[in-house]
Image (cartoon, rainbow over all chains, first blue to last red; front, top):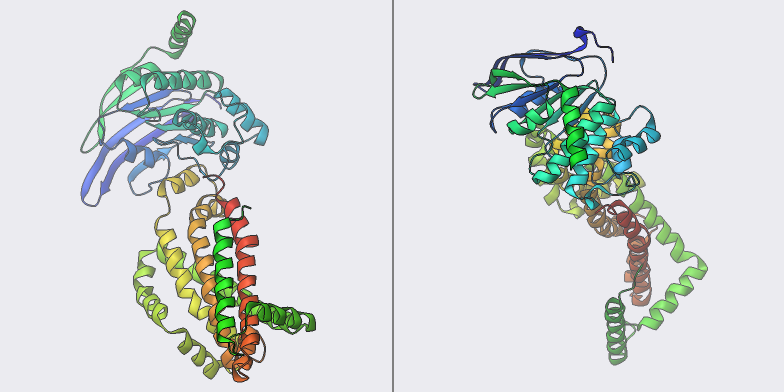
Length: 226
Length: 245
């Protein structure tokens, strides 16, 4: 992916309504190429609605979403794997560039080498989430959308999945929009945090986190000492 | 494939009961199982039984495919689109409750005593059944998985094949099961009323001759074929389709 500023993600949602009720108003943000932006807000503040708009799942809004050229990867709150297809087939079905070899690579990268033939519901929930993350990275996404992907996991498991995500992004950088209600999680991962206020959803304030190279060094230090 | 011993035992009990009643009755109107099986073998050797069984099977297959294709399309559309469901729900109830006999007679009256009328009559009887079952399936389709397919640009065909169809499998299998049971029986009535071959026609002939042995021989051959389809086709297909559970 080239790194021109015009290749970033530019989002403007002037007006989004469900019936007469306005749920998003004048919400604007940009994400530079390779930037990790976290959207933080209380549950039910329209974060998922916003993400559905970004994903192109909900075209009924006033505004625009300009995404860099390339494909979209998305990790949902639930893993949303096809239970009747094997792990490898779940990845192959999204048409990853590089085909079966790429699928094996990404499965190895998320720590599931050799599990391609398993049925998704024979894996633990943590493993299913790894598969969902692998599926998103398998398409070499220009933009990666994540909707509270590590919610309802115990702290250790969520932490190890965050480490996995960091490692994957170091290898395969991409622009990330990460939705969460957990400020600590956002600070742990993001370059920049946008705090959202509810009804209607809008950006309340912005927090720039230290840059990622420092965070990576810290994470590496943690891994060495742990 | 495991053979259930209790099932074999219960079938043996039925045969023994039949044998006992036949011996007690001692009448040509109630032949014992041995006579019926002997008749099945004899009519198979002459080729008569396979010919009529084949004719019936062909009608079952044709009307089954027709009913399933049309019924599934209608059912899925009704399950997916509320407007279509509202318009055709009344029709569905009407046709679900229309007696098979009425459809058959009307088909023969309107289309003539031919093969087209026979197969159409059977299919019309089964279509509402398939439609109602698959409508339930289409109503429960998972919107979350559809969103995954859309986000990852899976395309229409791939989505249908890998995301939608597997969710409809249990409903389709239910429709196939009840469909076979229903269609078999309707085909016999259709043959009895207006065809000159098939198991239904033969049963009609034997009825006129009071040939109960022949009648039972055809009925038994028929049951055996249905069981064979269940055991060697439907069972393995189902096992394969739901192995991920």
